Amino acid sequence: MAFYFVQFLTGLASAASLFLVASGLSIIFGVTRIVNFAHGAFYMLGAYVAFTLTARFSGALGFWGGILAASLIVAAIGVVVEMLLLRRIYHVPELFQLLATFGLTLMVEDLVVLTWGPNDLVGPRAPGLRGALDFFGQKIPSYDLFLIVLGPAVLGLLWLVFQRTRWGVLVRAATQDRDMVAALGVNQKWLFTSVFALGVFLAALAGALQIPRDAANHAMDLRVIVDVFVVVVIGGLGSVVGAFVAAVLVSELNAFGILIFPKISIILVFLVMAVVLIVRPWGLLGRAEAPARRTPGLAVHPWRILTSNERIAAAVALLLAASLPLFAGNYALNVGAEIAIFVIFAASLHFLMSAGGLASFGHAAYFGLGAYGVAFAAKLAGLPMIAALLLGPVLGLLGAAVFGFFAVQLSGVYFAMLTLAFAQIVWSIAFQWVDLTGGDNGILGVWPEHWAASPSHFYWLSLAVAALVVGALRIAMFSPFGFALRATRDSPLRGEAIGINGKRIQWTAFVIAGLAAGIGGALFAYLKGSVFPDVLGIPLSVDALVMVLLGGVETVSGAIVGAIVYKALSIWLVSQTEWSKLVLGGFIVLVVVAFPKGIVGTVEAIWHRRPSSVKAALLASKVETAE
Image (cartoon, rainbow, N blue to C red; front, side):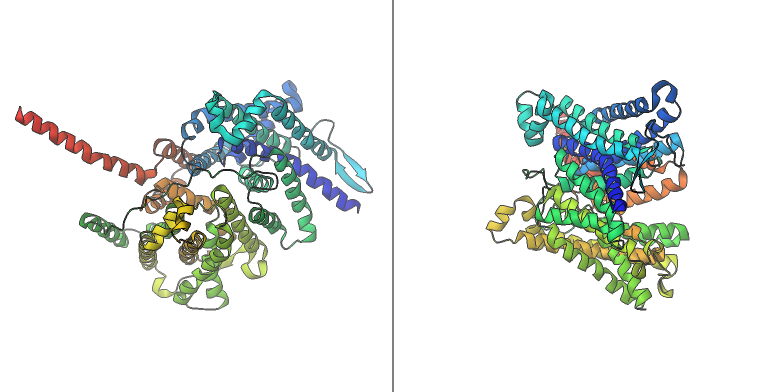
């Protein structure tokens, strides 16, 4: 009994740190509506800065002074980020803000390694809290007891700030209706800055307080951000009390899941998140909100056959791509095949986002299911390559059919978070079901047959499949089904009034996108010769979002260009510099700030402005001639 009580207290100690990070993210989202992917980066910075101040400048500041100073320093960095970056993109859709904060995360990861090195850093113990208390033979660290008290204390302070101060009233009002707050004359810029500073301070404080318990490392940002998203969604976006309740729930599930349900311990948290979103989409203590700005997508316009110039340009581009094996080496061909596969992956998500307005945060689930489907067919069933390529993507289709049925019942950020929960459930199963998937060791030896074994042959196969899949998605996008899907995206009530079953249309689109992603995953398994749980992970889902938004979600060919640019740049930077994340993250931030419509969207906007300028020039020349 004592052991379980100590385990419960350990869960409460973890809940305190998780609550600090989650409450900061919840406050920021509640007011600014930014899904701040960089929140984990500020948590990591808090740990590293606190290590420096407590381990190397302990004489001047002391341990607790170093913790507080580190939190304030990182909060000041957050203010600079908000003023220089986020203020410029508050008006753009939430997904582009997510893309910018993802780029910022990449930059911070490399900056941390550049400043503190790649090794884990163990911080000093808290003075006066280095021992442990004995409880019926079980030891409880004194520092854990301190954290258990700290969590409710911070919750109480936040409650007082939001309930008893004018600033807190403004924050609560902005959470409900920020446009009305602006209409009353409140300076939104400084309100957003102060809220962002408080949220970053809480995240940095959580990271700083972790150094006596865990070593600071450059992977802790992505590790914590997943749990934080889960806590915020379960508790309710914008609810600090909900974040506290959810943090306790998640931490205790993590603490006891490994004891009671060891084979599904990782899945438990995401199962709870999925159930909460299905039953109560706005979280346990959140409030139903008005629909957010819709995801930008393609405008509804009739099907237009490609003009002769466009057909020629497409044919030339495809022929140039097909001629790559004539002059490129094996490495370039492998890179080309990988880019073609990710074109399929990005195009599948682009179809869902552009025509359907559905931004999935867990699209890698269907890419990974396609890869595992091929591995099962080839290794377990012993099927030939063609049969495996045909049957493997069906697993992605089935996963999309099951998960999509529940996901399309929601919209906006809740839809995105439910897709994230489902993707993490699939990843957890692949990671823990060792007998079937091999767990972290993966499934090895998934090699193509002799007819596709050479780099040139596999490249041509990947290019041909990519062309077919992209063409099929384009036809679907501009078919009557595509028009119905866009009508549901733009006005569900009007669509329903004219007889369109919106949920069924969206579910069908989800299944189509899942099948297309599964085809890409099937080819990816043969390209790499193995399948690991990483193909189902959050980083790959984020890559897909980056590729779509980078190319331009409001364009037809944005996913193709985005995938080519992002993958080619990623692979090239890794081979050219040790700081590839820093350069790539900076490039992403630059594109979001300077070209919010994406690469293709910006080019099209410039091109569409060109005829008017040409006409003006011609008119001017005529006037000069007449004179």
